[in-house]
Image 1 (tube, rainbow, N blue to C red):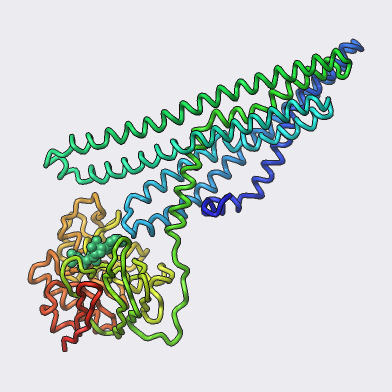
Image 2 (cartoon, rainbow, N blue to C red; image 1 turned 180 degrees about the vertical axis):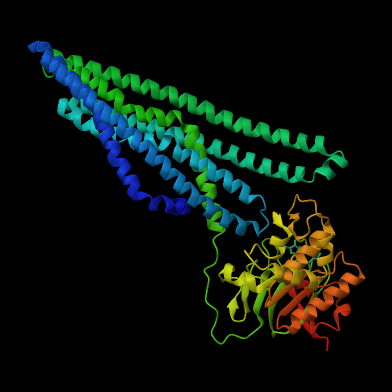
Length: 548
Ligand SMILES: Nc1ncnc2c1ncn2[C@@H]1O[C@H](COP(=O)(O)OP(=O)(O)OP(=O)(O)O)[C@@H](O)[C@H]1O
């Protein structure tokens, strides 16, 4: 398996012992199936000649027992493969989700949904008939050995046919994979665009945009159908070719058998056994080719997942630097998001000690929010690093760093759960802390007015107003005693009283030893609270100004 597939290969590697057992079971299952033609041969050659019915019954009973055992093993193997696919699927799901959340930071918001669909696709593939068919391919070498023992010419016919069928299988993969992948990509893109646009339901209906959006979706769907049609056509043609190859093999085996029989080189039983064995051994190849769509979609899903997991790999966490400066150190930071020629921030180096507050200022679109995200370790810089109390925020264990940070994004959102859980960051206890944080930012009264107070539901579909959402999110930012408080335009939507309360909350956090960084379009209004301003300008220029 290639390096690109390694994120998928790793959980599969962990399952190797079980897979090895499944291979052994497959050998036994196939051997049991291939025993039948051999016993039939004995019936033909031995029983018919000796007319000994007792031998016939013994052979029949032996055949029955072997077939029953084979069936039992087949059943056991199916159960083991199902459990294995479930386990691999669960591991993949967690990896894919964690990675897709990190990929989504770069702006690909729908990536998590797609990744989950891909895991489901892969689960279907692993839990379906394809792994069984692949394992059953062991029938081919077993049959080849037995055919060699019956007569080398049977072996040659089977070998040539197996190679031919294998080549047809590979051709089927090559011919169908491209169009299947193209169709899946188009479909994914189209669905993402459509669901993104339809999420703005009021806008879409209000402005009468639905017909336009659906009209744009239709041609994309027909491209998908066309790609799938091409793949289906090719697969049908190759499947027909495969059937032909199987018939040709059976005919060749019978022809060789009759020739050898006439030359007294084999017995009639051996000829029948060779023909039956040949068709049994080719069954898994025929199945694999006829299930082209399953493995085509599955492989495409695995490749997409591998891409997401690779792109979303968390940077290796490094321990905090012993003797690192307390507070926030921004060291040689250059930010240049993908696709930009000029940096948003160039070579920023500053120390912001604990117990200080700073306003980040600059015109619209200059890079203020991006700087805050880089400080939090959410956006990777082109150069430089950010240390919070000596801990690199990008290369850190987020579960440890998270509780030390308070963050109000520019467009705050709440997660599905109660207001209490949202403010308290889903910690098991700490109602007191939640109320303290809510009081501090002036959210307590507004929360009290909600139908179920702190137990009211929050989250995207809970129906909280924009103002209520901002207040709850502000309380969440101040919850606990964050060492770093990052607030992106915290005054937005607040009235004069709200602003005054927010100011007091910032003073409390600052005096409690936090470093506060806040974006404001009116830095002068913070002059009595902030120690200074970081001003961003065009081309990555920046200045640090004192407000004292
Ligand atoms: N991940 C990214 N990929 C590409 N471009 C990005 C990325 N992140 C930010 N940008 C671009 O960087 C620029 C600065 O955006 P940012 O939101 O940081 O500005 P801002 O100063 O906070 O703006 P505003 O005051 O309007 O909120 C924008 O042009 C934005 O499109």
